[in-house]
Image (tube, rainbow, N blue to C red; front, side, top):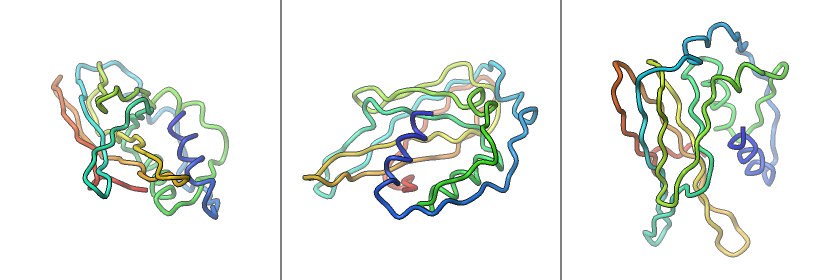
Length: 160
């Protein structure tokens, strides 16, 4: 949820168009994502500044969401620098979105993840003078069979 607030703050400086969500969030479709699994996701997120300096997501939230039509539409709207309007509060979303935090080196991990496709998203930013730079990085990954999956989020995964 904190990541969604950060995205809102990022977009606050832009002329934001509100776009209604068309895909319905059906809570029962997400039961398998609420379960505990045997997979592990380990990752790191960073962006390179123009001079080549690396900035990590240190201290920022990392969201892990099921790769479903609902979340795909949500992120597609965000990519257009618009604000998704959900039809009503989605209490079920809170139960399927897993939250983490990047450490000082930009590392994060999730334990006990059930099999399936997931979207991992975080924010990497820095300031130059009074201007905030950086952006949101996101990638879709698939886990299965009780394995560890390593993910690297960087410049090529920047969505905003």
